Length: 412
Image (cartoon, rainbow, N blue to C red; front, side, top):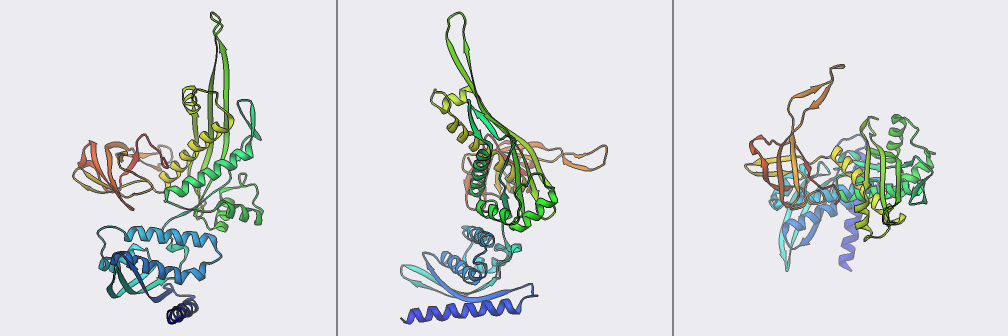
């Protein structure tokens, strides 16, 4: 009973502190709520990580409740922070000293009050200063994957018509699912997007200008919008007969093409646009279906899978490309870890050469990249990956150079 009363007192104190902080800081850039927390775990470092997360949720939970977009971005930021704090070289003291930088301002300060053994665990008490969560504190950009527009009302799959709107919806859902799996962006819920579109009467998005789309993105609370149209999709099977023997056989081909654009909501600029094409020839389809005749349903699943993978790969490459973070002889560290890379993967590191300038406008078009090295991933942790040099000259490698996976795609 005494423990319950103490818990209620702590919660009441926190809620009063939150109300006071919000009232006092309407025009203040800091908006920090300080609270005392304690947590237990097998190690002091794990206990402190739990305490920090508990403090952040206690402070911000009541303030963002009911706002699905802010809640999602807040939880993603907490996951990113915990991944950063789980680095093997971070002790309790290092976490406390570097917490503002590691959390990108979400946690302003941590003061360790007490550490003690509570068999079989370690208990840490700390005073944690938590920032009231705002969009600027989010560690990831957010993206809304809009429903794709079908160029045709139906697409033919081996003589069976497939509704274009159904194909477009399935592709958007699969792309959203794969985007979440990368862990690079905060991905807005498709139901939330549909609800806002309905509420704001934004039913037809594709005839609208980038400026109008950007305004809609702001209504959603997104940083980026992925829009696109399914230009072609289908499964064709043709039969042929050898005249000399009378032997008949069939050959099949399936493919899909999608015209896609990535829009920066803040500026209204199109940051990436391309038409992606994927296809399966007869031998590939034969392997998929065990030598049998391809069916519409199975082919659709395979096309959706490959196209969603291509779309996500293109977006992630544009928003957060894998880069060299550190070069130590033949050991190269990359700035991405779990979710993007895995041991055994090989990447090509490319670097800039001479600047390419448009002869008509004088505008810089970037640098003429060339292949510098091929590296292989040796080990991966939450935030970074260690690689070894396979081909090329290590002395040409520099932090900031882009590394692109070879013979693999994001999400595989």
